[in-house]
Image (cartoon, rainbow, N blue to C red):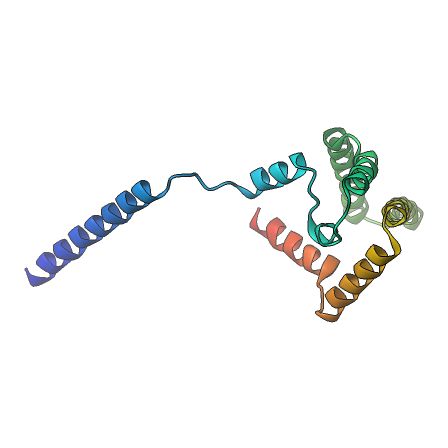
Length: 175
């Protein structure tokens, strides 16, 4: 009987606490919290830069040039994303077929590896070209500041692609 009574009291106090907290938040929140995507869109509408670029005191002209470079680099995201997804699926199917075969076709493995290497090389070239184009927009002082920020980031032990790979692997395991 005591346990039942104690359980009922705890349940009721929990309900009152939740109700009180909800009503306090409802009366004190006058503006809904914006999501990170809204913040990103709002910042871009104002011509703002994100990440390290935001710390370089870029002029409006520099921001416009960099935005143009980035838009040219990214192009049509949705079309590219669908194309790359299809390519990855095809590559995965080819790998699966090779691994499931009774004998390993080394020539096919080499062709697949060459295709993957060519894609990686192209992405690397495009990234360096984009970084070069952006760097040409910066003043010597801004370039120096950017180099200093990159050095500090590396000194702190920036995780980079290793961290992304780990997070990607965790996400795939959760599927």
